[in-house]
Image (cartoon, rainbow, N blue to C red; front, side):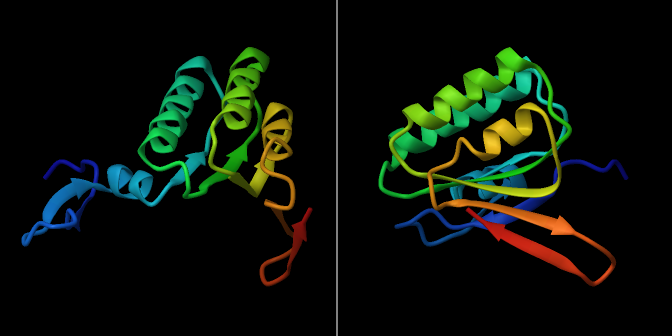
Length: 131
């Protein structure tokens, strides 16, 4: 049996029956964005498009951007940074794991007082930075 994108149930408001949508659609509807690889033009364009779409859909609900990336292209990062500054909802940035180079720049591009970083020290120890 081939392994594909997992599906989860989602009920559209006003509809009686739930429909099955892929997990990424469901996560985006909750306004959660993830950068989990090296940043390139394609990934930057996808994330920027999702941010713009979600800000058009509802500009009163905040976006949550989780970052675990070794960095990537400067132009890609700057375009994503500019999008984060341009959209009306506040962008919460959360660093999990490795956040280096342009990814660290994106971390500080989140709304002030809504930036978080986790630092793992060992199997059961971690620090939580809030700045």
